[in-house]
Length: 337
Ligand code: PMP
Image 1 (cartoon, helix red, strand yellow):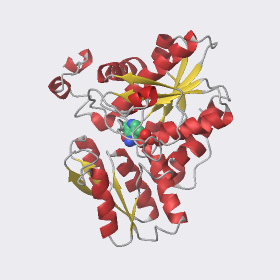
Image 2 (cartoon, rainbow, N blue to C red):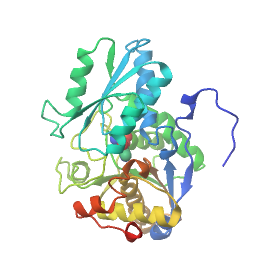
Image 3 (cartoon, helix red, strand yellow):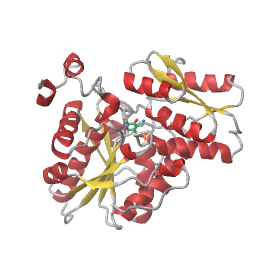
């Protein structure tokens, strides 16, 4: 890795994450699979990028003024990113989150100084959904802006300008495929658009968890979900503004069991402790690699996103009792004394 000169500002630590070749997934796919280490951002997730982009955009539009407040509905990581960026820039943060997310995320948000509002998980059509609750709170709070990560395209812009550009440079302009799952869709759409601008032959694949509706949307044009997933931060049921126009060439649907299998292997074999969306992304990248090999591309180069740190899920994914309570496989090393 290059050792760079000291950064002048802490916010410059967001982005420019390392890219690493993943040995197990590469072997399984029969080609090179790379993971972009988004857990290396200051808030330990890919969402620091969106937080910074959305806040800078609100400032530029004159909506967010000194001492103002940022309100957002989030599964957690965006809130953590917003709270860190807001602290660095002197803003207040109010975060609305469904109460079924990991307790680590709730404790982290409180520790970072965000005001946390927990709501019961419910359908998007319900006015009490965390997204709608956050919009109302922003309207009712003096000097507040609503980050609106799902439909604010300042989100995907950071991935067009940042993540895609970095991947292109890190892979020296030789990328055959990219895939990841969608929460807001900012990452898949933005990276997809940014890479296609540079090379239209890069295959962009959506990797969907069970319980989300995008796999069937891109396969058959119908928003329809099947099954469920415990993965946090991913699984979308509608075409958000960030997803609108995303250049998706193909799609995969990955189960929690398969995603967890990669979470376990990446930890045991490669020393990476990651969340489940990363495991699902890696499973999708292996599928994409196999597809490109089958299509005759020579040693295809495939990239995906390692979205957040597994330390955020010690009470869930890395807890044998929790896994058993969800009827998910408990991996052997959890059972050692
Ligand atoms: N993984 C995790 C852990 C996340 O928190 C998110 C953000 N919701 C994503 C993946 C998906 O990113 P995006 O919102 O850009 O689709």
